[in-house]
Length: 291
Image 1 (cartoon, rainbow, N blue to C red):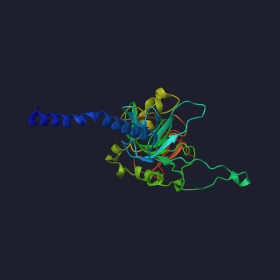
Image 2 (cartoon, rainbow, N blue to C red):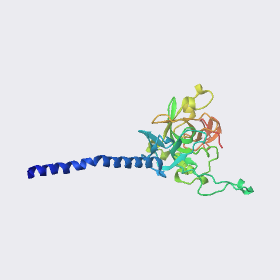
Image 3 (cartoon, helix red, strand yellow):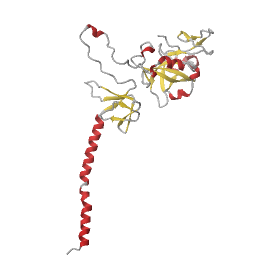
Image 4 (cartoon, rainbow, N blue to C red):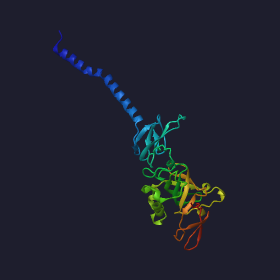
């Protein structure tokens, strides 16, 4: 006959081993919950994103502007609305996931079959004309901060939108503080405002061979740009982590605002010369063609 001590010991062993039998069941529940949670995260996209926020997996989307990829996951690099660019029906490419600063793109409403359809409908607030994130082929306005023998360093002030780059600058069409081009240029052209704020802006380089399209070997950087000049250029390369690369090798690109050595605002007289209206002294510049 078994003693009471042996029975109680066996009972304790039985009670201790019973929860172990339930571990596979709990593991199955946790696994299925994780799968459902990951599947939901892969399909649901946030409307607005902040820097560092996880968006989706690269298995479902391709990373676009305003995002970066880390550990096979797409993260937001800037704050703004999440935009998904629809791929062409005949293309098997993934949808492009990006974060925009100019607001989500709205699909155009179908035009009615009347004569009034020729007039564009003005619904909602106007689209922002200026962005703050440079991209290849973007037209930018920048201030020259350093001129060297082989290149000039500039600080990007404004990034023009693709749809507005070929239109005249009209400050009345702006819709935010970043789009107030008149205030930005007025502040940038003032020498008293040339402070350490340039370090907080995107930096870019204009190399000697990218100044103009002809006679590249005869370019003298001191005769093309001066510190403080406002330059219109186009982004030709995203460069490295420190600098973008710009070009002014077009007639409509180059210096748009400049001050003379006397401190007076100059006006262009040719494609390579600007004149001080007070002293009448002319100075050499790579002048952009006025609109």
